[in-house]
Amino acid sequence: MSLRYLRLAVAVAAVTSLALSGCGRPTSEGAAGSDYPGDKPIELIVSFAPGGAVDTAARLIAPELEKELGTNVEVVNRPGAGGQIGYTELTSAKPDGYTIGATGSPSVVVSPLDPARGAQYTRASFKPLAMQVVDPAIIGVPPNAPYTDLKSLIEAAKKAPGSITATTTGVQTGEHFALAQIKEVTGADIAPVHFSEGQSQAVAAFLGNHVPVYVGSASDVIDLVKQNKIRVLGVMDSQRSKFLPDVPTFQESGYDVVSTTARGYSAPAGLPDPVAEKLESALKSAIENEAVQKKMTDLGLETRYLDSQQYEELWTEQETTYKDLMPTVTQSGN
Image 1 (cartoon, helix red, strand yellow):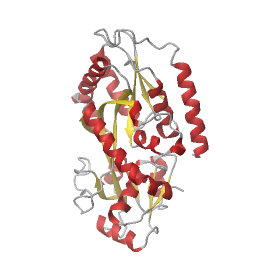
Image 2 (tube, rainbow, N blue to C red; image 1 turned 90 degrees about the vertical axis):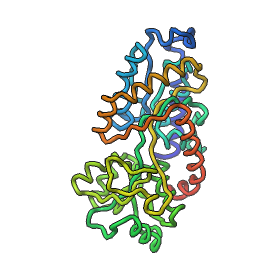
Image 3 (tube, rainbow, N blue to C red; image 1 turned 180 degrees about the horizontal axis):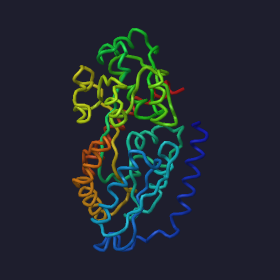
Image 4 (tube, helix red, strand yellow; image 1 turned 90 degrees about the horizontal axis):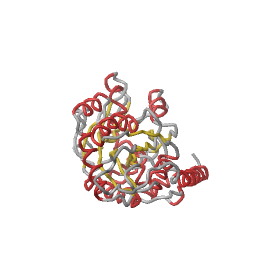
């Protein structure tokens, strides 16, 4: 996607969102009181297409939120521009508790950092409520590849900078930043190959032997590992993935690289404290619901609940990391 198109898409979304904000939206009168939410429905905006990990997680907790809050929770997809269209609509909504959104980082953190993307919001435009899922990045190779462990791949990439390529799902995505972080920490220059159509396109290129290294989320490769179609060399988390228990972390292999996708829920900034507290409590109960967690596990998604303060602190840490890596990512994305 060109930056020109990206700016146009975001601008159109901003105008549309502002036009809709006064049409049919419940007023915030009494929202800060004990009657919230009453019988007014809550809209849960998902900034990505139906069927993906963010959408699936949101649709699993929506019924539990309805039970906790006593009102309807409608999941609405607003995909496009790497999440910016949905995030623009979320942050343009009234901070009354009747519009919340599924937020995934790094997308929500990264998009405001690059002026060329024309984001109509900053990180301060969001009120984080809770984190539901952590999905660490992994790096893998074909089972018959000459790299038997992470060190052998890193050393080969250091000897021949830029000659080894790896998949990403687009410029300034989590995989792109993961490769930049690997280069910064280890000195290994693995060249990104961007597949803007997403994970399925990247997997197809890897399985077709068009790109020799796969970088993606742990949830992407669980079935591939079972089918012996990929050898995962390292997990970019502070702890091993419960889905890939035999794969060491980068830190265990001697490389201090942590790159995870965090998925949770937020509201527009300015949300009244009493409303925020009710939403945070409802989200905690929904996320920690045993039936929901089991379904998440069956889908290869690891539940790791963080409350609103912890979730905001994670965003702050990620923003610092990505801001430092942005020059490298911008250069390698050209």
